[in-house]
Length: 449
Image 1 (spheres, rainbow, N blue to C red):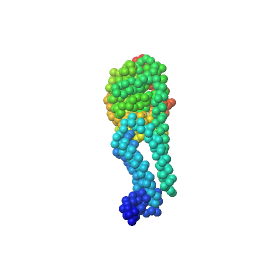
Image 2: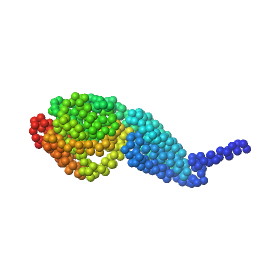
Image 3: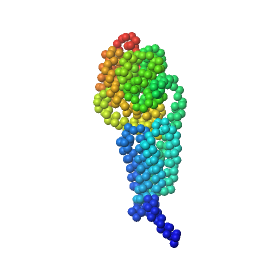
Image 4: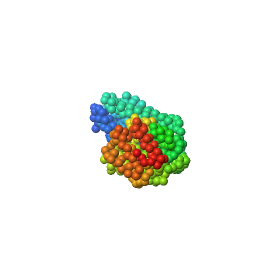
């Protein structure tokens, strides 16, 4: 009797737990397949992740974006544990484990928002941990799930394993790549962070090459050697790009101040011929507006106009879309997917490079506004090179305003050139020639042709 009374005493608790874990609830229809419960939970988790990325996490840091996605999928796995136990014949109580793991890590990232150094350190921990969790989940599926439900869960687990492998490879690649640098330039402190600069050739005026959005000094590999044959040419990495230290989001004035300090401390005397490609164009215009006495001439290579948001009909929509991509890019780089998805090089797809590109893109509207401060170069030579092929609507017309910055300017429209071919393709020769022509005009005192 005593034993029976003890059993009766715990029966209410057993029934409560059983209703969740073993489906011992009178409301449960035990003949139901778990497919709908599994599918609904996966869709709910994915939908919540997308909603958070486009709303609360939009424009946020890597920990906020990654944490939001993990938290959303954690809730999805938790929902699967509940619905499969309550409304199917195959309760999947084991899914509470990935729910707790992913959900708690996601909340931790959102709450504490660790900095880049901590995130980089964690990159040595989470890939093997996620791989172990994924393999454990596969074992649970084989033991506890039968039928079509497997075909819904297994691809999700495989995706987690891909993320683990990609994250591990990205971490190792970043570590070995940074240690294998054979750069010929120098790292110079410009006040709180260091910038990489590499100068070749000799003579003057020195040519300063400013890369486009998210690009580094390596993008000038085709042009710099040609120019260096006749004068000093310097390429450098803005903060957060290439070999330079990170400095967080910087507007055009901060970048111009950095460049001015860098050239001064590197011993590169002005005045300069300053060259900008793409979004590097607004950067050099801000520099020229801030330091007009240091400008001997300018070359704008398919440079972004200051009025891009109004002159280019498709640009506001592009910016809104790419703003989200830029926000996601550090998280995608962390799992090794940024390079394959966007076709970026190994150097351009690191987490640090993704953070640098994101920070630049976020402040780009401010940079464009600041670049409009340059209204005139006087009679200093200016060559504007425009790539007509594949140009967006309104691009060529907007380019026609740039030569008005100087009374000694030439506008060269290349019908077969593309935006990228001016730097890294067959049309890089035309870009080099434009720089050389400005140098000749300055040295000989002759008009541009």
